[in-house]
Amino acid sequence: MKNSILHIALILLLSFSAQAEVKVANVFGSKMVLQRNQANPVWGTADKKETVKVSIAGQVHTTTTDKNGKWKVKLDPMKAGGPFTMTVEGKKNKITFEDILVGEVWICTGQSNMQWSVENSNHSDLELLAADYTEIRLFTIPLVGNPEPQSEIRDSLWYACTSESLPKFSAAGYFFGKQLHKILGVPVGLINASWGASSLETWIPRDAIEENYAHKEFLEDWDWRISQFSDQMIIDYTKEYKAWEEAGKPGKKMRPPRDIRIAQNRPANGYNGVIHPVVGYGIRGSIWCQGESNLGRGDQYSDLFPIMINAWRERWQQGDFPFYWVQISSMKEPDVAPKISSWAELREAMSKTLSLPKTGEVISMDVGEGNDIHYRNKQEIGKRLARLALDETYGYDIVGKSPRYQSMEIKGNKIVITFKNVDKGLYAFNSNTIKGFAIASSDQKFVWADAKIISKNQVEISSTQIKNPVAVRYAWSDMPVCNLYDRNSLPVACFRTDKWPIASEGKIKAQYRYQFDHSKK
Image (cartoon, rainbow, N blue to C red; front, side, top):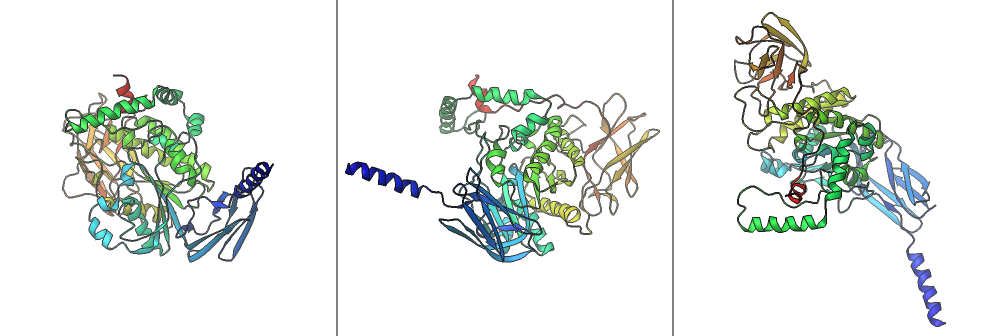
């Protein structure tokens, strides 16, 4: 009898202690930056039907959790400033966040050229010595892929920008944010959500692909690959990889072991594990640098990229927030003669997405390094992204857009190209000769062309080899040798005037990773 009473008492005690304390989603914390001038959501969990109170800067918001114990409030819009303290109270506990600033918040996302750190960029020693910006705050999301949407992220905090906290943070994100902070004169929060070697499709909610994408084979292909994958494949491959390392890495390079079920190439994995936990956090916009993992599938990219942007905007419920990206740069050896280029096709695919509202594109071909996909000049990328934001988002009298192809006119054996977004006038950088143009007749065989600037926004193209030209291409190469700029130092974007078939048309399957290939040897 005594044991039964003790047992019941223990159950009651455990039941009481199991009552959930109020929790806040862990993107919120001390030193965070809240987006100014908009109603920002704050959310978390507690017991079912519990009253939760959120207080900050004289505001008090009260709500009741739903049947699943979830709660959410919206803060009244606040002007830039701080520091502030936020408290979140439930019936069992009280959470206090301190040193909160209000300013501009941007999410920095994509693959390795966004993830690329400050400490590995040009002049990193000087940059880090000068990195004392207490009103720039940094937050990095852990890279955890998952086939199901996640609500939590772990082991991440907001930090003030210092020489100690900055080294491993996104360089492109930091140099962008630093420009905004200096010019706008308000706090800036940067959320780093970038994952090296990630493909575009991993950042897209699966249902968005299912609802919008015409090629079901793409997801079917991935589903089949996942069904064939097993723990034993990883075990076997890991043994081979370690043996290869111990032997001095002879012959063909082997990739480190990776579980494709939770890695950064499976559709939706990156969105579910990295983006979904912070969806709804108040932001001004997003900057994006990705594409190399989708080389060879440029035509598919032109379908998927707008699907991703639209899906994020729909789920964030903050309207068509600005979305600016860095076009993939350049790599490999310059072409001896004009030819097919997977890099140019991917650049073109990205440019097509400019049809969406409040989007913008930074051209980066001129900062690429022929022998390294990770170019170090992230300062220039940050400045060009800042120009876009200052021009398009913040209304400064500054030019953010690169010149782009507008139209062509055939005049005998010459073609006149007219550009839009020309500010101060076109010029050839570092040469008296304009480089990068190719011209073709109806046989679709391109040759290098002569080019001459004939007005502020027009260039005349010709070649002694082509008597009846019909098409022009510019910078259509993996590693283009091109030098046409506006006088404000913004490079002209690559383009083609033709609509001839490209190599990536119809290629919808993901590039197979080593684990799957290995299993079929």
